[in-house]
Amino acid sequence: MKIKLSYYQKIVEKYREINKRECLEDLRTAFPDVPTATLCSIISQEIQRKTKRTFYFHASPHNVSKYYKKYLNELESNKKQCGILLKIADEVDLSPALLARLILEHHCKLNLDEKDKEEKEPVSKSMISEMLKNPQLIQDKDLGAEVKLCVLVDNYYGPLSDVIRNVNGLETENRLKNDLTKLGISFIDEKQLREKGYDKTPDIKLDIPIVYQGHIINWIESKASFGDEERHREYLRDQYWSYYNRFGPGLVIYWTGYIEELNSCTEQGIIISDSIPTEISFMDPLILMKKTYIDEDVNS
Image (cartoon, rainbow, N blue to C red; front, side, top):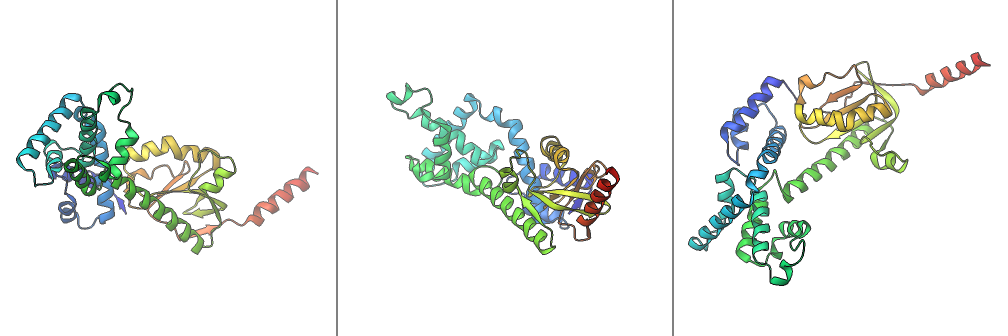
């Protein structure tokens, strides 16, 4: 779905106005013409940006200690009630999964024995990550239940969101390959390109270029996320122009939609779409062969 920049800004403004974790239904009501997948992607990207901006504030030793003390006080007065960390996360406007990580790290450091305290890194990041994925590994059962709840309800940050993103990425890549196969378009994928020795590679390199709306397409990149200004700018810098310099002009597919005004580099060789174009022309390799033969005859 293509969205005008002004309309996208209204969605973001509404999200910030709602200012609560469970905001999807409110956004669906406010913007019924926007697909749920698009709204979810926009929410996810806004949460990730907010988390990056505020992480160091929340992760300061003073604040982590304050959150942990609040958790212990609440636990003492509500021993049978699970959801304390979730409540604190909502109060301080922080991702539940990230708060769970901060609290778990702090708890583990406070409960080290003397031998472990002498080690340089007694509580490794990999150990914490493993406990977030498998809360049953947490010895404190109350904290384990709290962490599990935070991870399960957080669709936009943490282990569950990582799984969702990876699954969505694989699904869209498979969808891209299936669509190309149905259209009779021959290609090699990223894995095959890397086997040929390429380092930065698009998801798909076409064996024979196609033409879409007068533009040649040599490669296709699949993105399961929404194409907003900041993300598209980063991808242009880190990926798309590298692909263009190596393989020529190509196509980027933002499956959940993009800001319409971003499709401004078509003449420079980067085209944006939200699906595989079906109104395409196939370049005839015989034309290239004939040109080669003619050039050879002229040179001889």
